[in-house]
Image 1 (cartoon, helix red, strand yellow):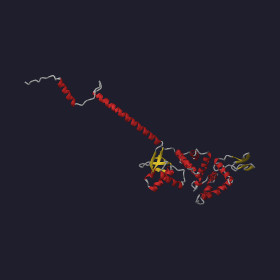
Image 2 (cartoon, rainbow, N blue to C red):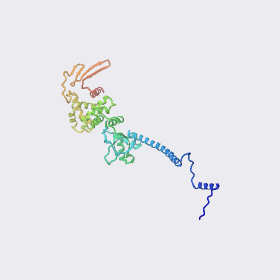
Image 3 (cartoon, rainbow, N blue to C red):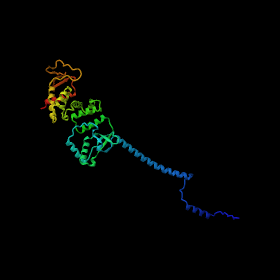
Image 4 (cartoon, rainbow, N blue to C red):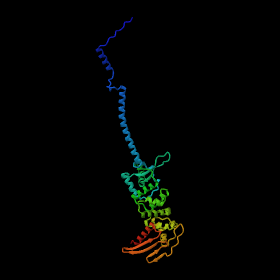
Length: 369
Protein backbone atom coordinates (compact mmCIF):
# COMPACT_ATOMS: atom_id res chain seq x y z
CA UNK A 1 0.00 0.00 0.00
CA UNK A 2 1.32 3.32 -1.11
CA UNK A 3 2.27 5.70 1.45
CA UNK A 4 0.26 8.96 1.52
CA UNK A 5 2.13 12.33 1.26
CA UNK A 6 1.43 14.66 4.05
CA UNK A 7 0.43 18.24 3.06
CA UNK A 8 1.94 21.04 4.98
CA UNK A 9 0.85 24.61 5.18
CA UNK A 10 3.45 26.85 3.47
CA UNK A 11 5.27 29.19 5.66
CA UNK A 12 5.45 32.98 5.17
CA UNK A 13 8.90 32.61 3.64
CA UNK A 14 7.56 30.09 1.16
CA UNK A 15 4.74 32.46 0.09
CA UNK A 16 7.16 35.36 -0.41
CA UNK A 17 9.40 33.15 -2.54
CA UNK A 18 6.49 31.97 -4.74
CA UNK A 19 5.20 35.55 -5.25
CA UNK A 20 8.66 36.80 -6.18
CA UNK A 21 9.06 33.99 -8.73
CA UNK A 22 5.63 34.77 -10.23
CA UNK A 23 6.45 38.43 -10.64
CA UNK A 24 9.73 37.69 -12.43
CA UNK A 25 7.96 35.48 -14.99
CA UNK A 26 5.07 37.85 -15.92
CA UNK A 27 4.77 41.44 -17.37
CA UNK A 28 3.75 44.23 -15.08
CA UNK A 29 0.31 45.63 -15.94
CA UNK A 30 -0.70 49.20 -15.27
CA UNK A 31 -3.07 49.78 -12.46
CA UNK A 32 -6.69 49.54 -13.53
CA UNK A 33 -9.34 51.99 -12.56
CA UNK A 34 -11.53 51.05 -9.70
CA UNK A 35 -14.40 48.87 -10.76
CA UNK A 36 -13.24 48.57 -14.47
CA UNK A 37 -12.55 45.16 -15.91
CA UNK A 38 -9.24 44.77 -17.82
CA UNK A 39 -10.95 44.25 -21.22
CA UNK A 40 -13.03 47.41 -20.70
CA UNK A 41 -9.91 49.41 -19.92
CA UNK A 42 -8.23 48.20 -23.14
CA UNK A 43 -11.30 49.15 -25.17
CA UNK A 44 -11.40 52.60 -23.58
CA UNK A 45 -7.73 53.22 -24.36
CA UNK A 46 -8.23 52.18 -28.03
CA UNK A 47 -11.32 54.38 -28.40
CA UNK A 48 -9.46 57.40 -27.02
CA UNK A 49 -6.59 56.89 -29.46
CA UNK A 50 -8.94 56.33 -32.42
CA UNK A 51 -10.98 59.44 -31.53
CA UNK A 52 -7.89 61.65 -31.51
CA UNK A 53 -6.75 60.34 -34.91
CA UNK A 54 -10.23 60.76 -36.44
CA UNK A 55 -10.44 64.41 -35.39
CA UNK A 56 -7.17 65.28 -37.13
CA UNK A 57 -8.14 63.21 -40.17
CA UNK A 58 -11.51 64.90 -40.41
CA UNK A 59 -9.93 68.35 -40.19
CA UNK A 60 -7.43 67.51 -42.93
CA UNK A 61 -10.19 66.10 -45.12
CA UNK A 62 -12.33 69.21 -44.56
CA UNK A 63 -9.43 71.45 -45.59
CA UNK A 64 -8.82 69.37 -48.71
CA UNK A 65 -12.51 69.47 -49.64
CA UNK A 66 -12.63 73.26 -49.14
CA UNK A 67 -9.54 73.74 -51.31
CA UNK A 68 -11.03 71.51 -53.99
CA UNK A 69 -14.30 73.45 -53.90
CA UNK A 70 -12.48 76.78 -54.27
CA UNK A 71 -10.39 75.37 -57.13
CA UNK A 72 -13.48 74.06 -58.88
CA UNK A 73 -15.29 77.39 -58.45
CA UNK A 74 -12.31 79.32 -59.83
CA UNK A 75 -12.06 76.94 -62.78
CA UNK A 76 -15.78 77.21 -63.46
CA UNK A 77 -15.53 81.01 -63.48
CA UNK A 78 -12.52 80.95 -65.82
CA UNK A 79 -10.09 82.39 -63.28
CA UNK A 80 -7.35 79.77 -63.54
CA UNK A 81 -4.43 80.31 -65.91
CA UNK A 82 -3.31 77.12 -67.64
CA UNK A 83 -0.81 76.31 -70.36
CA UNK A 84 -2.34 74.79 -73.50
CA UNK A 85 -0.64 73.32 -76.57
CA UNK A 86 -1.09 75.80 -79.41
CA UNK A 87 -2.23 72.94 -81.65
CA UNK A 88 -5.34 72.43 -79.50
CA UNK A 89 -6.63 75.97 -80.07
CA UNK A 90 -8.95 76.77 -82.98
CA UNK A 91 -8.80 80.48 -83.81
CA UNK A 92 -11.52 80.04 -86.44
CA UNK A 93 -14.13 78.89 -83.92
CA UNK A 94 -15.53 82.42 -84.09
CA UNK A 95 -15.56 84.83 -87.02
CA UNK A 96 -13.09 87.57 -86.13
CA UNK A 97 -13.93 91.24 -86.38
CA UNK A 98 -10.34 92.18 -87.15
CA UNK A 99 -9.68 91.91 -90.92
CA UNK A 100 -6.28 93.53 -91.30
CA UNK A 101 -3.26 93.25 -89.00
CA UNK A 102 -0.24 95.47 -89.45
CA UNK A 103 2.90 93.41 -90.05
CA UNK A 104 4.91 96.06 -88.23
CA UNK A 105 2.70 95.69 -85.15
CA UNK A 106 2.87 91.90 -85.35
CA UNK A 107 6.67 91.96 -85.57
CA UNK A 108 6.81 94.21 -82.52
CA UNK A 109 4.53 91.81 -80.64
CA UNK A 110 6.63 88.77 -81.60
CA UNK A 111 9.81 90.46 -80.41
CA UNK A 112 8.17 91.44 -77.12
CA UNK A 113 6.96 87.89 -76.45
CA UNK A 114 10.35 86.43 -77.38
CA UNK A 115 12.13 88.80 -74.98
CA UNK A 116 9.72 88.98 -72.05
CA UNK A 117 7.22 86.16 -72.53
CA UNK A 118 3.46 86.44 -72.83
CA UNK A 119 2.28 88.90 -70.21
CA UNK A 120 -1.45 88.68 -70.90
CA UNK A 121 -3.03 85.23 -71.37
CA UNK A 122 -5.44 84.52 -74.20
CA UNK A 123 -9.04 83.49 -73.52
CA UNK A 124 -10.55 80.26 -74.82
CA UNK A 125 -13.63 78.10 -74.31
CA UNK A 126 -13.75 74.31 -74.36
CA UNK A 127 -15.17 72.74 -77.52
CA UNK A 128 -16.57 69.28 -78.14
CA UNK A 129 -13.64 67.18 -79.38
CA UNK A 130 -14.08 64.38 -81.93
CA UNK A 131 -14.13 60.93 -80.35
CA UNK A 132 -10.67 59.59 -79.64
CA UNK A 133 -8.98 62.98 -79.92
CA UNK A 134 -7.62 65.31 -77.26
CA UNK A 135 -9.38 68.41 -75.94
CA UNK A 136 -10.08 71.31 -78.28
CA UNK A 137 -10.50 74.96 -77.42
CA UNK A 138 -12.07 77.83 -79.35
CA UNK A 139 -10.41 81.23 -79.23
CA UNK A 140 -12.39 84.02 -77.60
CA UNK A 141 -9.77 86.74 -77.40
CA UNK A 142 -6.06 87.08 -78.06
CA UNK A 143 -5.95 86.37 -81.80
CA UNK A 144 -2.81 88.47 -82.35
CA UNK A 145 -1.04 86.93 -79.33
CA UNK A 146 -1.81 83.40 -80.52
CA UNK A 147 -0.58 84.15 -84.04
CA UNK A 148 2.61 85.70 -82.64
CA UNK A 149 3.37 82.65 -80.47
CA UNK A 150 2.68 80.30 -83.38
CA UNK A 151 5.04 82.29 -85.58
CA UNK A 152 7.75 82.09 -82.91
CA UNK A 153 7.32 78.33 -82.62
CA UNK A 154 7.52 77.85 -86.40
CA UNK A 155 10.68 79.95 -86.46
CA UNK A 156 12.49 78.51 -83.42
CA UNK A 157 10.81 75.15 -82.67
CA UNK A 158 11.43 76.07 -79.03
CA UNK A 159 9.42 74.03 -76.53
CA UNK A 160 8.44 77.17 -74.60
CA UNK A 161 6.58 78.48 -77.65
CA UNK A 162 4.69 75.22 -78.22
CA UNK A 163 2.29 76.14 -75.42
CA UNK A 164 0.50 79.33 -74.50
CA UNK A 165 -0.95 80.68 -71.28
CA UNK A 166 -4.72 80.80 -71.37
CA UNK A 167 -7.84 81.37 -69.31
CA UNK A 168 -10.50 78.74 -70.00
CA UNK A 169 -13.68 80.74 -69.86
CA UNK A 170 -17.06 79.08 -69.24
CA UNK A 171 -19.25 78.41 -72.24
CA UNK A 172 -21.17 81.60 -72.97
CA UNK A 173 -24.00 82.56 -75.25
CA UNK A 174 -22.87 83.48 -78.75
CA UNK A 175 -23.93 87.10 -78.38
CA UNK A 176 -21.84 87.50 -75.20
CA UNK A 177 -18.81 86.04 -76.98
CA UNK A 178 -19.16 88.49 -79.87
CA UNK A 179 -19.63 91.41 -77.48
CA UNK A 180 -16.50 90.40 -75.53
CA UNK A 181 -14.45 90.19 -78.73
CA UNK A 182 -15.62 93.59 -79.98
CA UNK A 183 -15.02 95.20 -76.59
CA UNK A 184 -11.45 93.86 -76.49
CA UNK A 185 -10.62 95.26 -79.92
CA UNK A 186 -12.40 98.55 -79.29
CA UNK A 187 -10.22 99.06 -76.22
CA UNK A 188 -7.00 97.67 -77.69
CA UNK A 189 -7.17 99.24 -81.13
CA UNK A 190 -9.84 101.11 -83.06
CA UNK A 191 -11.68 98.95 -85.56
CA UNK A 192 -12.34 100.39 -89.00
CA UNK A 193 -15.90 101.45 -89.80
CA UNK A 194 -16.25 98.58 -92.25
CA UNK A 195 -14.99 96.01 -89.73
CA UNK A 196 -17.64 97.13 -87.26
CA UNK A 197 -20.41 96.82 -89.82
CA UNK A 198 -19.08 93.48 -91.04
CA UNK A 199 -19.01 91.80 -87.63
CA UNK A 200 -22.54 93.03 -86.89
CA UNK A 201 -23.87 91.40 -90.06
CA UNK A 202 -21.94 88.15 -89.51
CA UNK A 203 -23.03 87.91 -85.87
CA UNK A 204 -26.65 88.34 -86.91
CA UNK A 205 -26.33 85.81 -89.75
CA UNK A 206 -24.86 83.25 -87.33
CA UNK A 207 -27.93 83.56 -85.13
CA UNK A 208 -26.24 85.36 -82.24
CA UNK A 209 -28.70 88.26 -82.63
CA UNK A 210 -32.20 88.66 -84.01
CA UNK A 211 -31.05 90.82 -86.94
CA UNK A 212 -28.37 93.33 -87.92
CA UNK A 213 -30.14 96.16 -86.09
CA UNK A 214 -30.16 94.11 -82.88
CA UNK A 215 -26.49 93.17 -83.38
CA UNK A 216 -25.43 96.81 -83.77
CA UNK A 217 -27.39 97.91 -80.71
CA UNK A 218 -25.89 95.21 -78.47
CA UNK A 219 -22.35 95.00 -79.84
CA UNK A 220 -21.91 98.76 -79.63
CA UNK A 221 -24.24 99.47 -76.73
CA UNK A 222 -21.73 101.82 -75.10
CA UNK A 223 -21.32 103.87 -78.28
CA UNK A 224 -23.30 106.98 -79.10
CA UNK A 225 -26.42 106.91 -81.22
CA UNK A 226 -24.49 108.57 -84.05
CA UNK A 227 -21.79 105.88 -83.88
CA UNK A 228 -24.36 103.07 -84.11
CA UNK A 229 -25.92 104.85 -87.08
CA UNK A 230 -22.56 104.82 -88.87
CA UNK A 231 -22.10 101.14 -88.07
CA UNK A 232 -25.47 100.40 -89.66
CA UNK A 233 -24.40 102.31 -92.77
CA UNK A 234 -21.23 100.27 -93.15
CA UNK A 235 -23.16 97.08 -92.36
CA UNK A 236 -25.31 97.87 -95.40
CA UNK A 237 -22.17 98.26 -97.52
CA UNK A 238 -20.93 94.84 -96.38
CA UNK A 239 -24.29 93.21 -97.07
CA UNK A 240 -24.68 94.57 -100.60
CA UNK A 241 -21.11 95.14 -101.82
CA UNK A 242 -18.94 93.08 -99.49
CA UNK A 243 -18.17 90.50 -102.17
CA UNK A 244 -17.18 93.18 -104.71
CA UNK A 245 -15.03 95.60 -102.71
CA UNK A 246 -11.34 94.68 -102.54
CA UNK A 247 -10.28 97.44 -100.14
CA UNK A 248 -13.36 98.05 -97.98
CA UNK A 249 -11.41 98.64 -94.77
CA UNK A 250 -9.87 101.73 -96.42
CA UNK A 251 -13.24 103.46 -96.78
CA UNK A 252 -13.24 106.69 -94.84
CA UNK A 253 -16.25 107.76 -92.84
CA UNK A 254 -17.35 110.29 -95.42
CA UNK A 255 -16.95 107.93 -98.36
CA UNK A 256 -18.76 105.17 -96.57
CA UNK A 257 -21.72 107.36 -95.70
CA UNK A 258 -22.00 108.55 -99.32
CA UNK A 259 -21.87 104.97 -100.53
CA UNK A 260 -24.50 103.76 -98.05
CA UNK A 261 -26.79 106.66 -98.99
CA UNK A 262 -26.56 105.58 -102.65
CA UNK A 263 -27.36 101.99 -101.68
CA UNK A 264 -30.43 103.13 -99.75
CA UNK A 265 -31.61 104.86 -102.90
CA UNK A 266 -31.41 101.69 -104.97
CA UNK A 267 -28.00 102.06 -106.61
CA UNK A 268 -26.72 98.57 -105.77
CA UNK A 269 -26.90 97.19 -109.32
CA UNK A 270 -25.18 100.24 -110.85
CA UNK A 271 -22.47 100.23 -108.19
CA UNK A 272 -21.77 96.54 -108.77
CA UNK A 273 -21.54 97.22 -112.47
CA UNK A 274 -19.07 100.06 -111.88
CA UNK A 275 -16.91 97.84 -109.65
CA UNK A 276 -16.85 95.04 -112.23
CA UNK A 277 -15.21 97.21 -114.94
CA UNK A 278 -11.71 96.25 -113.78
CA UNK A 279 -9.79 94.98 -110.78
CA UNK A 280 -8.37 97.97 -108.85
CA UNK A 281 -4.77 97.90 -107.68
CA UNK A 282 -5.38 99.92 -104.51
CA UNK A 283 -8.07 101.67 -102.48
CA UNK A 284 -7.87 104.96 -104.41
CA UNK A 285 -8.29 103.22 -107.74
CA UNK A 286 -11.29 101.37 -106.36
CA UNK A 287 -12.85 104.61 -105.18
CA UNK A 288 -12.23 106.14 -108.61
CA UNK A 289 -14.54 103.45 -110.04
CA UNK A 290 -17.29 104.40 -107.57
CA UNK A 291 -17.14 108.16 -107.22
CA UNK A 292 -18.35 109.23 -110.70
CA UNK A 293 -21.53 107.23 -110.21
CA UNK A 294 -22.05 108.70 -106.74
CA UNK A 295 -21.64 112.23 -108.09
CA UNK A 296 -24.21 111.56 -110.78
CA UNK A 297 -26.64 110.11 -108.26
CA UNK A 298 -26.19 112.97 -105.82
CA UNK A 299 -26.78 115.64 -108.47
CA UNK A 300 -29.86 113.95 -109.93
CA UNK A 301 -33.39 114.05 -108.47
CA UNK A 302 -33.95 111.23 -106.01
CA UNK A 303 -35.61 108.10 -107.41
CA UNK A 304 -38.63 106.64 -105.64
CA UNK A 305 -37.55 104.39 -102.81
CA UNK A 306 -37.30 100.68 -103.47
CA UNK A 307 -40.12 98.37 -102.47
CA UNK A 308 -43.75 99.07 -101.76
CA UNK A 309 -45.94 101.48 -103.63
CA UNK A 310 -43.91 104.19 -105.43
CA UNK A 311 -44.25 107.58 -103.85
CA UNK A 312 -45.66 110.32 -105.99
CA UNK A 313 -43.48 113.37 -106.49
CA UNK A 314 -44.83 116.13 -104.25
CA UNK A 315 -46.20 119.20 -105.90
CA UNK A 316 -44.32 122.42 -105.50
CA UNK A 317 -40.84 120.95 -105.10
CA UNK A 318 -37.91 123.31 -105.57
CA UNK A 319 -37.81 126.85 -104.25
CA UNK A 320 -41.01 127.67 -102.43
CA UNK A 321 -39.79 131.13 -101.44
CA UNK A 322 -36.40 132.75 -101.03
CA UNK A 323 -35.91 131.07 -97.66
CA UNK A 324 -37.40 127.61 -98.28
CA UNK A 325 -36.67 124.63 -100.53
CA UNK A 326 -38.64 121.40 -100.88
CA UNK A 327 -36.69 118.44 -102.31
CA UNK A 328 -38.18 115.80 -104.61
CA UNK A 329 -38.09 113.36 -101.67
CA UNK A 330 -40.32 115.69 -99.65
CA UNK A 331 -37.69 117.11 -97.30
CA UNK A 332 -38.23 120.75 -96.47
CA UNK A 333 -35.18 122.96 -95.94
CA UNK A 334 -35.78 126.30 -94.27
CA UNK A 335 -33.21 129.03 -93.83
CA UNK A 336 -33.36 131.54 -91.00
CA UNK A 337 -31.11 133.86 -89.05
CA UNK A 338 -30.85 134.99 -85.45
CA UNK A 339 -28.46 137.13 -83.46
CA UNK A 340 -25.80 134.40 -83.43
CA UNK A 341 -25.78 133.48 -87.11
CA UNK A 342 -27.53 131.49 -89.84
CA UNK A 343 -29.88 128.55 -89.14
CA UNK A 344 -30.91 125.65 -91.37
CA UNK A 345 -33.99 123.63 -90.38
CA UNK A 346 -34.69 120.32 -92.09
CA UNK A 347 -38.07 118.59 -91.94
CA UNK A 348 -39.23 115.31 -93.45
CA UNK A 349 -39.89 111.65 -92.69
CA UNK A 350 -36.86 110.44 -94.67
CA UNK A 351 -34.41 112.17 -92.38
CA UNK A 352 -32.52 109.73 -90.16
CA UNK A 353 -29.23 109.71 -88.26
CA UNK A 354 -27.22 108.31 -91.17
CA UNK A 355 -28.49 110.92 -93.60
CA UNK A 356 -27.88 113.73 -91.11
CA UNK A 357 -24.32 112.48 -90.55
CA UNK A 358 -23.76 112.54 -94.30
CA UNK A 359 -25.16 116.06 -94.55
CA UNK A 360 -22.93 117.27 -91.74
CA UNK A 361 -19.89 115.84 -93.48
CA UNK A 362 -20.87 117.48 -96.77
CA UNK A 363 -21.36 120.85 -95.04
CA UNK A 364 -17.99 120.50 -93.32
CA UNK A 365 -16.32 119.68 -96.62
CA UNK A 366 -17.83 122.78 -98.21
CA UNK A 367 -16.72 125.04 -95.38
CA UNK A 368 -13.20 123.72 -94.89
CA UNK A 369 -10.39 125.44 -96.77
